[in-house]
Image (cartoon, rainbow, N blue to C red; front, side, top):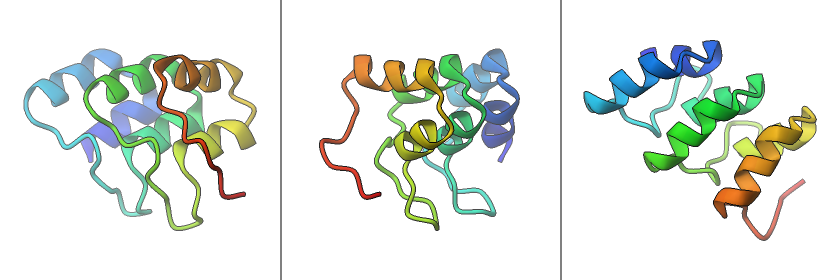
Length: 96
């Protein structure tokens, strides 16, 4: 979806516009990932914060059973992990 692309590219203004016009923050792309998964893959902290503030599900699994939190940890995205922690969205149990 356009929101997935905005998340990958780190285009916060476009993501804000899409969300303000009703874009589904938890929509799946062709790889069954959400925009938050894509933000985690690319380490886009500001996009992740925006998506979370609009109700993105940090506990959503992709086909490989990874959540955005798992992806951020595996890829060593420390700023993003810190963001997830401070927002209080971290799951207390991880499936690794």
